[in-house]
Image 1: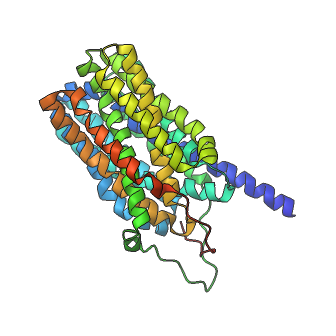
Image 2: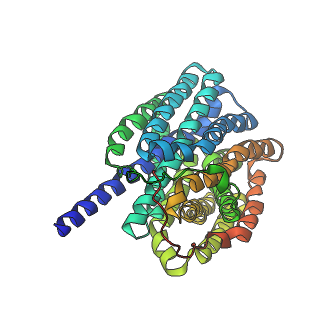
Image 3: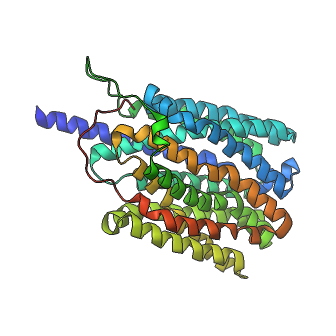
Length: 404
């Protein structure tokens, strides 16, 4: 009987691992499917670089509005329901963006991106909490591979963007397809998430207590660390294609391919990151990735050869690959408080997506996109100072299991 129970639990964990991996992958695909064609969106809507930055601000602003309450929401409803709810909101938001692209009116796009950001914020926290729970129950590193699934989704989205651009497919059609894919796929995937563990009869229910997490120095430092790497990653997501097109004079297809090179390197870094983290530890690995990101940024901004710029995109992707997943893992070191801590860290990290797009857009308007990217250098310097906060927590006495 014990063997049967063990086998059933392993099968349940395997199904949950696959399902949460799908949640990460589809999230990345929906995110990248239109960002890989950001120059086309800018031109279709008749925007300047600064105005495009403000439009992207709607996406990150919506996420920042949703993130502070996402942890308590996951605590109350469970990760599966919050992922499904987030995917529905993303679908509605992307439909608004498609309407804007079809009509040339920017306002439905701004509202749609705000909704998309809100949905992705809740979806993001919930899938990270679910992934951390699966990782904890398996007893082996999993989070980097889950974020690799996100990167695979962005690779797919970048590939779809490049193919659609080459074929002349209107961006509105491409975005509409993503709007349908998000809720339909997640309605199927969340059926295989781990079941919510209800408290034992008579047991005291653990409260989410999100305010307490905002007063924890380690949690806040992890948030700053994750913010720095999110800024490094998000700047490339939002502006790398534009940098290739405007800064280096390439066509839209090569711009999308450069974006694809970045996210492909992100994927490779995350697929191999678990073994590196297990062998060398979080601190050493993050310091190495920060150096790689710096080298890639310098090539992208200073190299005169397009091929060297593409090499820089690869190094930038490798360097940015592990900061966010390691931050999520570090925030979830204590499973009993993973939901609220992941929510706090995500809220801080998403400030990068809130401030980054308009900051880079404003600087690009006045100095050019390549010079504007030098802001990332200072952000990486801050990251190196707070990397030690990611060290794993020492083993602690068991705590009551939280309703995820």
